[in-house]
Amino acid sequence: MERGLLTFAGVASSKPLSKANSGEATSDADVMLRVKAGDESAFAYLVQKYRRPLIGFMYRLCHNPATAEELAQEVFLRVYRSRSSYEASAKFSTWLYRIATNLAVNHARDTRHERPEKTVRLDEPDQETGTTPDLADESLSAEEQLMKRQRLAAIRNKVNALPERQRLAVMMHKYQQMDYRQIAAVMKLSESATKSLLFRAYETLREQLKEFVSGK
Image 1 (cartoon, helix red, strand yellow):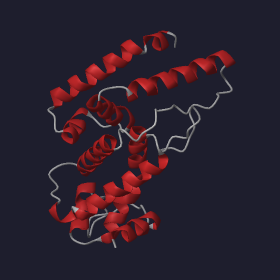
Image 2 (tube, helix red, strand yellow):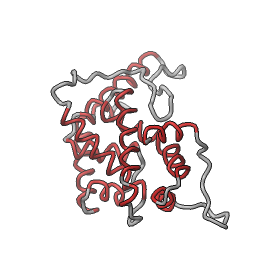
Image 3 (cartoon, one colour):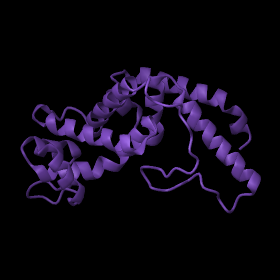
């Protein structure tokens, strides 16, 4: 039944929902309250809206397209199973990414000894946009293209090598465009602790990547 709902959500319209008797767009938290009340079309709307960003987030953490899809599906299943206990006390996206982050961390720990050495694919399409930003840019010389590829590969490797909490914070801040308050809520930290965590992460990256930064 639950997985059937996800299949239904995959073909349902992602048209924004409106409040009853009003043309005013409703918040995602309000949409989730409709899911809680048994509105399956509201759940389909949330799946359509967050599916690609969530797959992109998971892909950057697990580096496997099939696993990213599976983890994103599991997040939505957990959202649906938790619908009866949902309270709109925070932004829906914050609650969603808290579930996603916990699942990603547990998956990483459970498969730590099964994963092969991480490799960087310079021609992998972005799971969120479908584009391949690392492909050769015809406006650049061969030397500039090589430097760009080396820089992107170095950034990916260094981000992946950050301590777990720093890496998760950077992923949310840089790739999901989440602000300090949202990241703090997801990671159950104070806003100041979140800023400090990101500061340390970016300082580490800046130091380790300074040869590429200075060569820009």
